[in-house]
Image 1 (cartoon, rainbow, N blue to C red):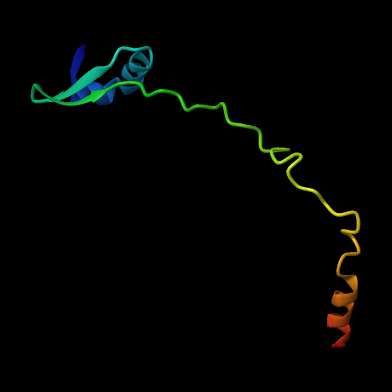
Image 2: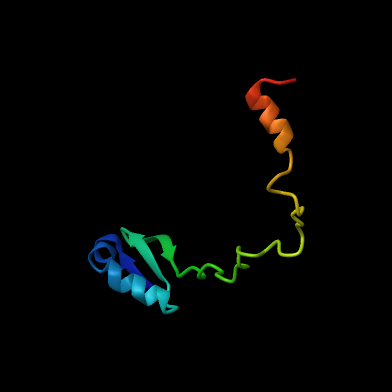
Length: 81
């Protein structure tokens, strides 16, 4: 595993990160003493279930949905009890 000092890591960070992404982790040292190890992380899992239609067949809309409760709503607007 490659060990680099902080100055070298700052100067060549892009190249070092590309190497880490290719599976070559490295250690950043300060005054010759290892401080941190840099390695690639696993990519996020993108296999998510689709959102559209995920409840298909689980909900049933009544046939009178458009007129349901229209008398009660009209009474509320007209101020009738």
